[in-house]
Length: 348
Image (cartoon, rainbow, N blue to C red; front, side, top):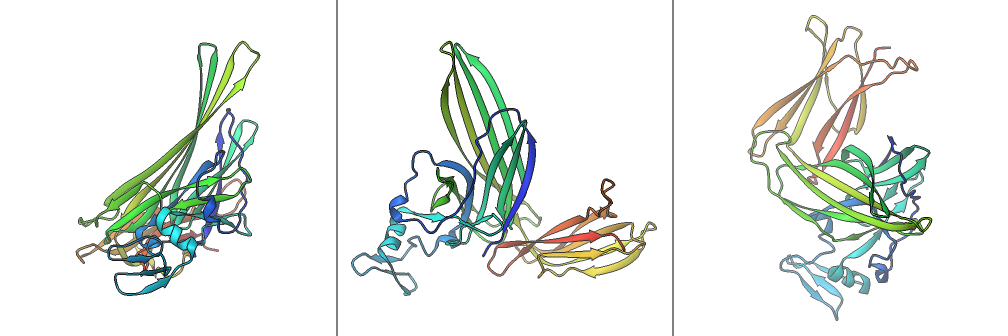
């Protein structure tokens, strides 16, 4: 199952923002599939075609309504409930299950998600993101604009959350961006399958990150606030979400090379690409680190990528280490990309 991550950002913001509080519940009744009035967009749930193969009709499949069974093109048979039959026809609701650490998971389907909560405190907005482990490079933004139209004062707030998800450059993919909503009771859900859909062809060039695509959605909510009778105030809030899709080549291995100030090798360490989080204690002679990654492009040709880091900096405010880290994008057997973090620590 996909692990959830939480991160809090503080953004300077003098306008009003709707505070949202999250809580979870179980799989929804199919009768609740339609988006109800008052539900508001709070995130996106990214699914690949392979994530939904058990819930969608494929070419060559046959659905027998009376017998409640689905016969796949390969001859395999799946018995269905009435609710599952409805899923094949109209899409279905998946509830976000709240975890002990306060994060959320859409456990019914394997996908990647990015959601947020906003909490107003005086002139600052604390925007807290929750995302899957393969969602990275998250960029939140909040803006406000106020102007007059005759006797009306218009006040528009815009909340934007942009992030990146890596996929295997060798595979042809269909990526869907499903909207995540919050009900008035605080529960979170998504309806899948949904649109928009992005078709991605394999990358033919020998270059890391040579493929870059994006999907975005937005919704606006408007309400009027009556004033003294002389003028009215119209509040509008727009919520924007964008997921950039980065195509990554197959990472076969990697090494960390520690160099001294005379540009001589101090130590060479092979990176363990089976561990999601790991650290490297630097030698006292290390002046900089070279990360060398060994890739295989779509045509099966090897190539290397090198990244250089200065020695680890020390946080002068509290005296604690502020480790520099490098992120690797490792292609798993399933074709998904797994993020691996290597942190560089100062010598003891």
